[in-house]
Image (cartoon, rainbow, N blue to C red; front, side, top):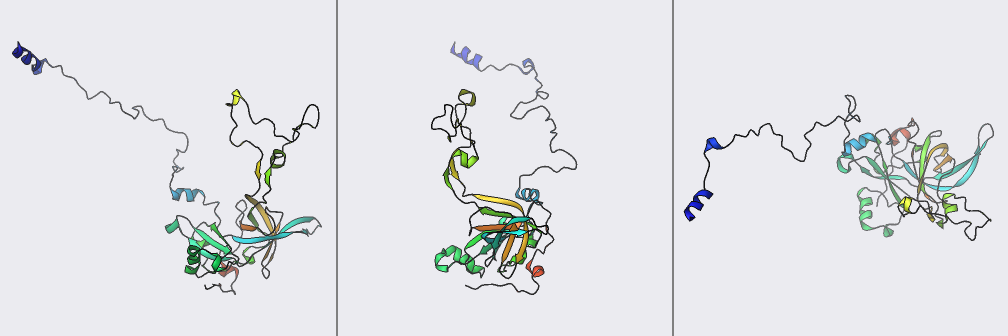
Length: 302
């Protein structure tokens, strides 16, 4: 009986008794869909390039909005008023440029983009950290109080290291964008911070005249406060960009640049000036040799 059981377990049928199965036409299912992908009607055209996620593609998308030349640093001195030829009075902001100098470059091959590092003012070497002091010493530039980077479109906008940017870098009649940190006002309520109208002065309102009120729904809104809800909090103290400011007057001897209108920040704050991106690029020189043919670049030694 044992031998018969062993024979039955090892029995192999004859080849002609095994049915022939053709597995060639049976599709193999996997993670990918076997159906043909439908064409996308977005960004699929002969004249439209495909979207890319590389750094080069990102720079190409920002090519039209990247300034052709570097910006400059200035200090806000205060406000005054001027008059149009027809007698209209308009407010002006007075800015002064203090030893604005090119400190370093950022190149496409080394950093992935083109930029100019600009410094202004003066800082005693004993108040500068050693890594930053070595950065200034390598470029043969004196330590600066402020250090800011301005992106440029290509290598044509890179100025020589050590060159001084004067007030004549901006021309009268052109438009600029001014960036400065707004005046910090501390913790403020909803009426002051966001302009809420407040609640009624009477008719049942008790001690909540300037309160914010409801912060959201109950079950209908998920019983939570939505992100970005306007509420009381810290007001001011962040960077504000004022666009399309017209340059009214330039005084190269005193380093003054007068802009039409107001900008954020108290007197004495740092202001970053650059050519307006929402206006046509001004027809001004992109290097200091064209702007100042009789002035040699200055380089400070450490």
